[in-house]
Structure formats: structure tokens, C-alpha cells
Image (cartoon, helix red, strand yellow):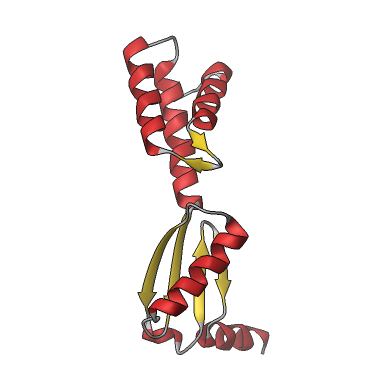
Amino acid sequence: MKITKQSRRDAKALFNASRVQGVLEEGRIRAAVSELIARKPRGYAGTLDRLKRLVKLEMDRRTVRVDSAVPLSASTQEAVRSQLERVHGVGLSFEFHANPALVGGLRIRVGSDIYDGTVAGRLQALEQAL
């Protein structure tokens, strides 16, 4: 669907208005969408589509997946959380997973950024270098 420049601007304005201290607030997004649907201004379908895309990108950017060879202790999880929130800001959503194939270390994915400190990752890098 082709989206007009005005719809893009409107979606961006609604998206920015739904953020509180840099963190997306679900209640504000719901209220903005409800009001937009109720008013139905010209190009509202494009605005909704663009807003949906912006919200999805923000949710993906704020999702953290931490893979480790063994389940992490609560103190280690908290240390990882605090370090990543210091670097990437508050409002992150964390998922911790155990993957024995990693052998050791951590693989952390924050949005599209991947920090690979695993033994398996290092072995793979060494294999590619040789």
C-alpha cells in the first residue's frame, strides 16, 4: 500500500507522542489508535499501517535475547540486565535461554545487534580464518 508523506508524518508524530522518557507506553498507543479510528481522517489507513510498523520496529529494538551454555543464576541475569540497561537504556524486554551447543560464554542479541562471546562463536571465527 502506498503511504502519503502526510500519513508518514502523522504516524511519526503519534509514535513520538506515545513515548514517555524514551520508552513506548502501551496505553498511549492504544488511545492514539482508537482516536484515529474513531475520527477516520484522510489517509488514516496508511497512518495506521506506518504506526504499526514503527511500533514493531521499536519492540524488536527493545527485545534482548541472552543465550548461554547453561542456565544463568539470578545474580548473573541481574548483572547482564543492569549492564545492558546502562548501555541501551531502560525498558528492555529480556529472554534468557540455555543452549548447550554454545559450549560456554554468552550470545546477546539486542534488536539487530549481536554480541557473541561464546566458545562456539570463537571456534567458528577461527575456522573461517584458517
